[in-house]
Image (cartoon, rainbow, N blue to C red; front, side):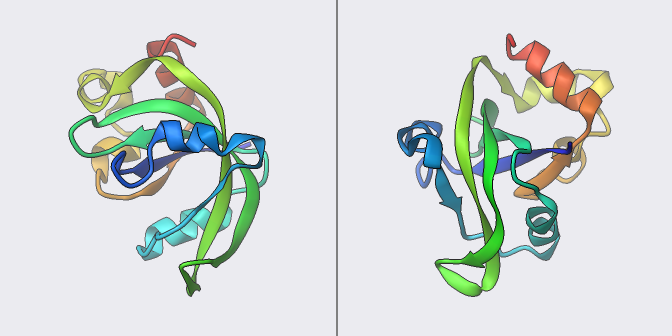
Length: 135
């Protein structure tokens, strides 16, 4: 099963808002980059993703799971969206600086292509970040 990372501006959609949506989750909309769209289309129901706050915070703060695979985005049907639900908050957020400082994570998409809003995460990267976050 693949792992992913989803980025969000906390002022637009925060971890707390995601949690408030409960088990049914919420639609992950507004992705307008073709590479990110390809990643959205590859995501399968039940797969998990890190929830990353961009902006000033720049940290992985939680884990979500895909509850609905790619479908027309309700904000623009020319694009695709998924639905995700909160799984758990990381006991300790994992910052971008921490990730960049760990040589084992130098190949991570977040480090190499920092602007990509939906990205794959390898199994090794997933385990390392979960450990860094206290899971």
